[in-house]
Image 1 (cartoon, helix red, strand yellow):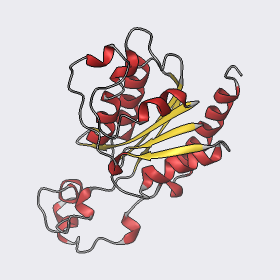
Image 2 (image 1 turned 90 degrees about the vertical axis):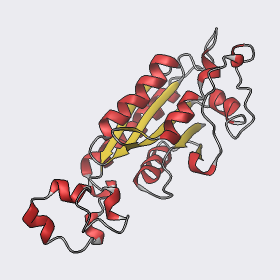
Image 3 (image 1 turned 180 degrees about the vertical axis):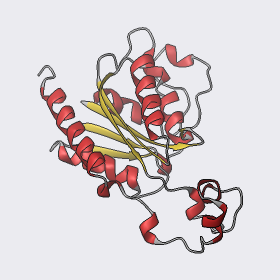
Image 4 (image 1 turned 90 degrees about the horizontal axis):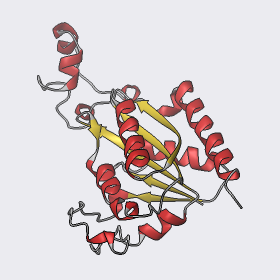
Length: 216
C-alpha cells in the first residue's frame, strides 16, 4: 500500500491532482491523507517519544504512525509559501520525529516528494526529500515539482490594483496599468505541461518498480 500525504489546503488543486495521478498510475492500492482536514500540532521537542517511538501528543497524527510504518512507500506532497514548504507539510515531517529513535522505524523504506509552487517548487521538493532522507532514513525513489506561476494575488480580490503584489512586480508599469482582469486561462494546471505529466508518470513507474523489488 502507498501512503500519500497531501499538504495543500486546496482540495483538488494541482498538488492533489498530481499526487492522485502518481498513485493511480502505479496500479497499486493507495491511501490519501489530506493534512488540511486534520489537527496536527507542532513537535514540542520534549523527546518523550524516544521511549516508545510514538508521540505523547494525542492529536490526529497519533493514528498515522502505524500506517506510515506499514506502508510500502510514502509520498509526501507540499506547496511553497514564502520560498519554503508550507507549515502543514513541514509540521507533518516534524512529527515523524518519534520514528527515528534508536533503530529508526523508517530505515530504508521507500519515499517520494512532490511539490507545487509559484516559482520555487524545486526548492520545496528538495526540502521534503532532504528531511525524509537525512533525518528519517528513507530511500528516496524520486521527486516531481511544478511551478504554476499562479500568485495568491489572483484570488485575493486586489490583484489588479495592489502595488505590492506579484503582478505589479512582474509587469512593467505600463503593463500593470492595462491589467484589468484575472481570467481563467491565467491559472496554470500541471496537466497542460507535458514535461510535468511525463515526470509524474516516470515517478509512478519508479515507485512501482521499487515496491516490486521489495523482499516478499
